[in-house]
Image 1 (spheres, each protein chain N blue to C red):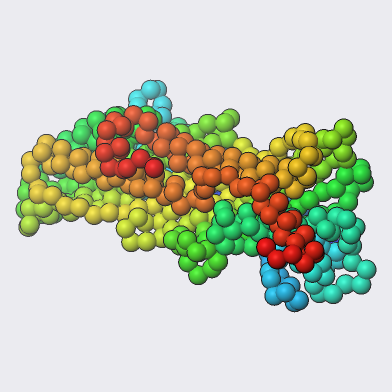
Image 2: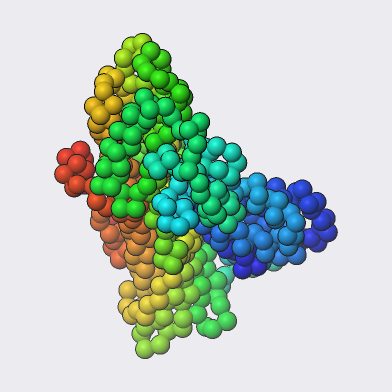
Length: 294
Length: 256
């Protein structure tokens, strides 16, 4: 293609901000800080960059469900929309603490105990806590670096049976070795509706796997799956066991099905007979030239 | 510029066009560098004489025209377009024929093209290209992928003959895109590009084509294995190394 004169159109601050935001939001799991460095350099406009970062990081952090350490070794908090109390305040239901977060730096700058209003009622907490314990057990066995949390997403102030309520289970496991040019992540969200009327649990799961390999190029895997299941509503402990077992079953099955997709890459067992095919084509040509029919 | 290339290595490959145009708008003065260093999907034209398709790349381009490997004519027509020597053109024709058979065996469809030209060191350079569209509507006979594409560019620099051997330097770039989207298994997308190099000194007793063909075959096999290991192997390792093996093997038959 012929060389063209580059049009000397300067992008507006707003346009630059939108571009920066797009790059940040599309960073692979665990790589946003590297992307941030490159974007800042390429943008050459710190004002637009800072604005983009302040908008992109919170969205990215919640979508990736990053896990941050609480200060003073008070534990960890998962950054999710379920636990978001205010823009920079995230609840950790397990330890009933609230972390104050700097999204752009991806650190927790302070922590305080949660207030009663921020926590579910004792009745709900029984269910939440039992489920949390079961999920924690499962995640500990299934994911080498997995973290999880259980939130009440509806009906957190219920005093007793008689109404529906909802819990959400969040599981995240990430393996990041940027030095090996390889990052990967697992994210699953399970919404459980405790239906009082029918005495059933309606379960909806969303699973997402991502991987990025960039030693010799850039190849990325992005896979998602949704599923549904249900079981009867029982005591907090029995419900918890049921739910965790359903989650375990579906997640294992999904990871297994990804194995199947391997077979869709073009693969052949036997090597191509270069020498023979050449000989054949040469022979064919010579016979043609000599007018000999084979 | 390094930062720009860094971004291209991190952005999702399925959005690489968007990423590239964003970078071009931010760095207009670097457009030719960016365009030459970023892998883009292969394009195709149809040879007027034979009706066969051929792949476009820098190696068969002169000005704005592209030379067909079937007729050696430029499309659109070009007076005095660069041509390989008649010796090399013979080799090029043969290479195209045999590579088409290889391509058919591995990919069961698709398009291939080979271009050759003399270089300054008394050797020559050959470029083998494959474009395979795996979607149900396109060339593949085995079309169970919703949308799958494998574009391969293999550039081999062949050194001058010395004592019956020659030095071959192969640089391969594969761009792939596999996606499925269905009710039962959700969405799956594996895409991107890998580039790798291989150097060999080989006897020319069986001819250049044999050597080049075997190198390409080995390279493509290795790249497929890498993809296999990295994505399916490593991904599994990354997220669930501690899953009891019993659970997995019970559900899936081992590959025969």
